[in-house]
Length: 147
Image 1 (spheres, rainbow, N blue to C red):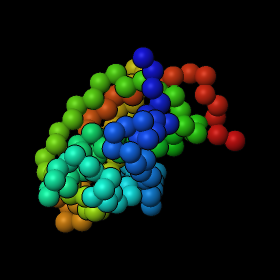
Image 2: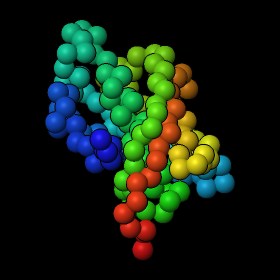
Image 3: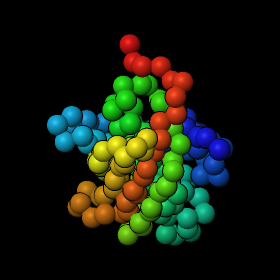
Image 4: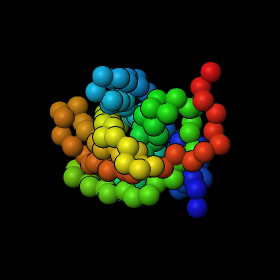
C-alpha cells in the first residue's frame, strides 16, 4: 500500500482536527529542518483523557513523518513527492499536553540504495524530548520536479 502521509487529512481521524506545520526552516548546510505544529486545544484531544488532556502519540508521530516528507521534498526538489515508508522506529519519551508547543526537528542522514534516511524528534520549549522517529523512505517515481 502506498500513502503520501503529507496528504492524509486528520478529518478522517477520530481526533477531528487537521494540523499544520508552521515556521518551517531549512538548513541546507546541515541537511535539516525545524518546524512547529499548531497548538491543539483540549477539545481537539477528546478521549485523551478526561482531566488529563494529552496530544495522542499518533498525532505527534504523524507530525514527525509529515515534517520528514517536507525535507524529502526539499532534497528531491519535488512538491509533495510520493513515497513509501519501508521502516519506522518510534520512541515515545514524554507526554505532550494539549496546548503545548511542539517543536519538530528533522535530520537527513543520507541515501542508502533507494532509501532516504531521516531522524525526527519532537521537543517542548524546554528542549525536553516528547519522542523521536527514525524513517527510511523510498521516493516513488512519477512525480514532477519543482519548476
